[in-house]
Each structure stands twice: as C-alpha cells, then as structure tokens.
Image 1 (tube, rainbow, N blue to C red):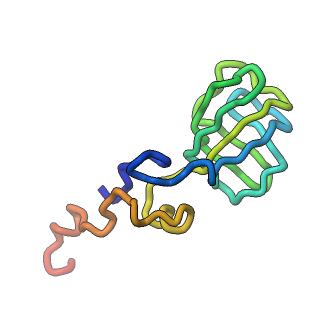
Image 2: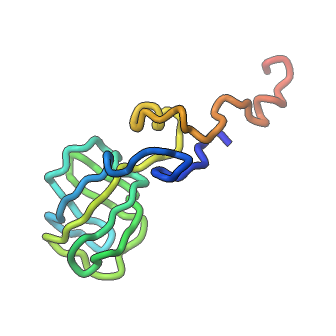
Length: 133
C-alpha cells in the first residue's frame, strides 16, 4: 500500500505526540460535533485526523477524531458528535493529524525514516499498461 500502516505516535511510527499536542478551550459552540477556538494559530487542517480529548466539561475524558480544522474561523469539526453537550469554556487537548501520505510524513513530522508504506511501488493499473499507453 502507498499509505503508511503505522498509527501516529505508535512504536512503528516513532513520532512523540507531546511535540505535536496543543491545549485550548471552546469559545463558541455550533453543536456536539462543531465548535470554535479562535485562539488557535495552526494551519488549516493541521489537526485533521488528530485526536481531541476533553479535559473538562460534560465530555471530560472522552475523545474524538478531528474531521476538519479551519484557521480563519477557528472551527473544529469532529467525525462524530460527542455524547454530551459541548459548552463554551470546555477545555481540550488535541494533537496534529496524519493522513498517512509520505509527503505529510516528510513535511509535517520529519519522519520519513519510519514511514511504513510503499509509495513508489507501481499500481496494478501502471503495471498492466502496454508500451506506456
């Protein structure tokens, strides 16, 4: 597979998540899966596929994967709604997400040496073409 088989932060990956973890608190709430934190300064989708863990509020101790993060609005969207209402002031920790592509491994995590995929192996379609057609 061209994608990495390791999970970000596991022993095969080797990335230390503490260096990519941020804390914050909710400024405004849209619903149980969308909220904003306008104090964030990370690039769009820096946290996409990362894990957000609530450290206070109704969902304290619960975690959910981040679906989208938008810098201009400070909005987080989670893959699934949290079991309880999210409220302004709720605190969280979140670490950067990984889409499992070699380019991300290189640019975001400087971790190509531990990449667990085969991005340069030809696909079936490439192998089955005749004469470069």
